[in-house]
Amino acid sequence: MALRCPIVSVLGHVDHGKTSLLDKIRKTRVASREAGGITQHIGASEIPIDVIKKVCGNLLQMLKADLTIPGLLVIDTPGHEAFTSLRKRGGALADIAILVVDINEGFKPQTIEAVNILRQCKTPFVVAANKIDLIPGWNSKEGPFVLNFNEKNQHPNALTEFEIRLYENVIKPLNDMGFNADLFTRVEDITKTVCIIPVSAKTGEGVPDLLMMIAGLAQRFLEQNLNLNVEGHAKGTVLEVKEERGLGKTIDAIIYDGIARKGEYLVVGGPDGVVISKIKALLKPKPLDEMRNPRDKFKPVKEVVAAAGVKIAAPNLENVIAGSPLRIVPEDKIELAKEEIMKE
Ligand code: GTP
Ligand code: MG
Ligand code: NA
Picture 1 (tube, rainbow, N blue to C red):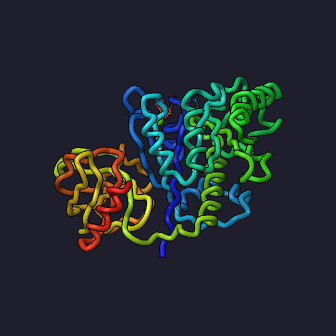
Picture 2: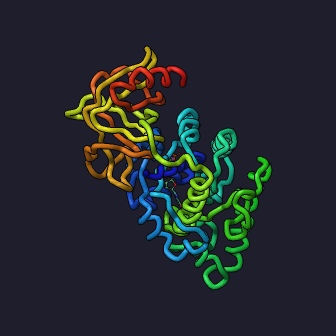
Picture 3: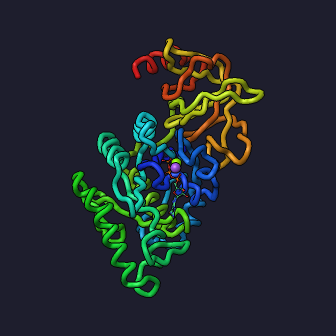
């Protein structure tokens, strides 16, 4: 039986660097191709476990735990104030989350909104304190933060400025919202204190540390949720309905549980009732590729195991809207799925 890939949502205020950080991890350039530099949709990409292990290297020893997660499905959300519903959807899907905060700007309205969403969903999270390269005098370089954070590599004034911004702009606002929080290297119990990982999406500093902490949190989550085995039919959420050349209307979806198979039926909620449609094709982006902005073509697959992003080609999708719940089931389970969907 397969283990479900934990879902990691990335939340935070507009332009604090969510997409850039994911670009650094994926080695993509999604942020620079967005209209006005603003994310307007939910994105999804898979990070395989071997990529995590490679980026983290020796740092993984800090975890004192073996990684058995198959990888992570990372969900990018928009920070612009207009997209509260997308943030809520991204927050609700998440098993764990990364809150991205510009360490120089500190907490902003959508940072606070994101924390409230995570609190409401009881989603464990870490904070990526981004843009440390902009701290005056900071000597930022690619690689682990723990190797760069010392008097040998940093001027004393830069270290002082770092501590001030870390406390004033990140720790204190979290304390004010009722959370204990500290620099991750100073945290003894991650169940009681929110870990802050300083990063730069520009230089890549801290990216290994962030991935290490996220993998650790995901592993803990997995061990506490023994229902993470993937079984049963696929449950998911519609991210977007899109016209594709040669395929007609398609659905980009997140499958958060179960297994979807080609030839099964799509059962999806809509404003005028439930839509049922026989699936023509299940298409998957390549690992590390972003659903919305793929570099490569999607590949047709026979089955999709949660959690994953998938493009679904099927007839009669004209009335489907983003945010709707979906199921993918064999013919004899259509009625059951329909009842489930109507309850959601
Ligand atoms: P929305 O999705 O629109 O909310 O924004 P976002 O949080 O995804 O931020 P995005 O990745 O679009 O980055 C916003 C701007 O900040 C871009 O110009 C990035 O190049 C810049 N930026 C992001 N991270 C860093 C960083 O670590 N250092 C510096 N100097 N600039 C950064
Ligand atoms: Mg973005
Ligand atoms: Na942006």
